Length: 428
Image (tube, rainbow, N blue to C red; front, side, top):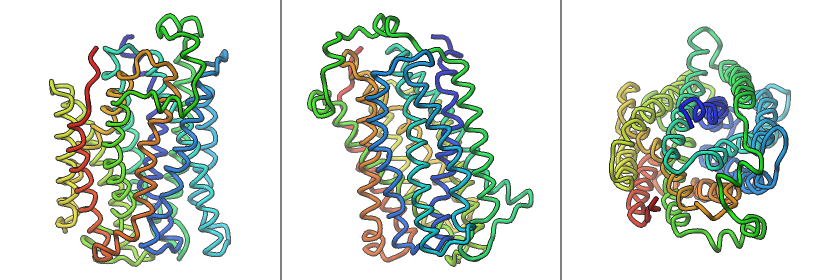
């Protein structure tokens, strides 16, 4: 497949990632603004990975058996994106509908559940189309392109609130109301999402069943007769070993998304009162830091293919990211924070590309690519759920300061780096 073929397969991921970036950078800020206690913030993060764990295996299994004139994976992509656009216009208005604080929280939670369900529904088909239509030699390149588009979308989504505040939209609002700079970020992100997905729909023609079977020689019996438990029982060992690395990595990043705003509001701005301008300025700056992380990830993604030892590159990336997390609490200047977040971006680059390269190569000849990738997504979701449940207790254990959770995240990434040594690479 030529470069533009690989590019078109993943271009819609740019728009999907803008939505995901807006969610990642602003959910804690939104619920803190609505009135959530810091010790409860991690609980609001249970819903996104829970919905991903439920939705992605279902979408994978259903799309394995779906053959329409619009494609095999694309119908799910389009429906997910359409729902995400609607929800992105509703979620940031949770505090502006005249509801009580508790009712606004419930409304926000329902919208968050629907948003993550739809984002997962739109995101998974891109990974599956690469698994379906890209050969083993080009998969690393295809996932690197996907990683680039993912990070480019992240940069755009992360900086929106800061940019909109800079051009004059208010980044403070009445107690319990989300600032208009955040609200308009979600509106514009929704528009870009649907345009990017339409581009993919118009420019990607999925294979029909005959073409698929020609390039993916799996017997009908092997393709049809298996449930999720059977698939998990027969999964290659690489599936589980990469899953262990994923557990530590995604728990670490869950704590980053949950506690960075409160962390730098305390260490840099010295104010954790959610109605203050200082707290909202910190929230805007978090978007810039996450964008710096994404840029660092793009640069490091270009470096990773230069390593001859893929496992070494994976482990080294996680070590660099772990050190970056540990440095965050000690940076009291907002610009010095660029250093640790560039380092965190190195870990993010490896997390986006390498697990799927290891797993899809190990799954050659197993069939059920969509179902397996959907199940593999549970190695992303389960650690986030576990980290969300444990977050309040760990925060209390480390002294009630949100910046201490950055050190916890660093330790988790170092554990992930050690776990990489157990992975056995699939030989071509």
